[in-house]
Structure formats: structure tokens, C-alpha cells
Image (cartoon, rainbow, N blue to C red):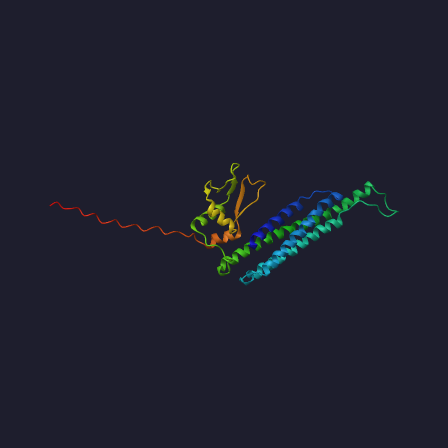
Length: 268
């Protein structure tokens, strides 16, 4: 579902905001080295948002009441991301780099001139970085809002819900366990057998767990090794399944009537 992509984009924007906010490079070549990858990351994230916006605009979600507001909100994320890139680009323009002046200018390496240029540029750099971090924060918030708006609209108008598998009681119970957090998948060193343990310490059976994973209702996150514990989380589709379905319960068998007492032969 698109929702999971927007949540991931929100986390990516938030991480980039933190990185930009903590830049401590001095004006000059060091600052340029730090700004270059950040600008590339903003453009990459902007492109991903545009891809998701186009996909959402061409999806059945546009038939859901309230979807226009969500599309507008996502368009604002594109604007904020572009402004963040502009802020970082302004920092590049304001960042003083060392180079030879004109022939009649001060000599290269003049300490006084370098100090003066850095002192003049420092407040402009701080403002540009602060503005960029603020816009990235708006991007992260906008992506999370987009995800929540989609979930809200689909829950309010279930006739537009995407097709979800009807869960059995065992599958629904397993999904509830994963949703509580702390579920881990581990593989034994001997034989490579996998086991799934929920956050409460109980073991989840492999069959319902596999069905949930195959239907993308849960996500098993990649680890550095298949033999290390891997975390498991519920996807947006899984959340919708939890919110819109009841577990299929097998009715309890009716109490069988006691058989009539056996006839006792009368003594003759």
C-alpha cells in the first residue's frame, strides 16, 4: 500500500532534517563537503515523493471522499522539499571558498581576509541551514499526515478499501500479536530452522505467520545476518485488516444430549 511508502518517506525526511540541523562544519571546503550529499539526498527524496504523488493521483483512491485534501497536502510536501533544497543551495552560494582574487587583490592565504569572509558568511549560513531544516521537518510531518489521511478516509468509507484477505481466527490472533510489538524471527544455526517469538514471549505458528507475510500484512525487516533476530512490524494493510475485520470464530459445538438411560431388564 502507498501508506507504508509515505511513512518511510517521513522517516527519511526526519533523519535528513536531523543531519542538517547538526552540521557544524566551518565555512569553507569542509562545509561544501558536508552540503553536497545533503543536497543530493533532498533531490532524491523529492523525486520519490513525486512518484508517489503521481501513483496516488492515478489510483482508485481519488474516488474516496476527502482524497483531494490528501493530494493537496502531498503537493505541499513537494514544495517544502524544493524549498529545503533551495536553502541548502543558498548555503553553498554563501559559503566562502578559497581562491585567488584579481591580480591587484589581497594575496592568496591572507589570514585577515579569510577571517573576515568567514565571519561575514557565518550568520547567513546558519540561517540557510535553519530554514532548510525547518522545511525538511515540514516534509516529514506532511508525509506522516498523508499516511494518516489515507487510513482515515478508507476506514470512514470501507467500500473503497483495497482487497484484503479474510483472516482466519489463527491468522487474526497472530496479526494482533505482531501489532503489539516486539515480534522477532530467528534462525537456528543447526538446520536453519526459523522460529517466531512474539513480544510477550509466546511462539507464533509458522503457517498463519507465513500467510500474513505472503499477503504483505506484516513485514520482516532485513538484518545483517539471517541468523540474527529480525524484527517484524505490521504494514498499513495489516492495520486496516485489524480495524475492519473480526476474527473468524468457529462456533462452539453444541452440547450433545445425554443418551437415554439404558433399559434395565426386569427380573422375572
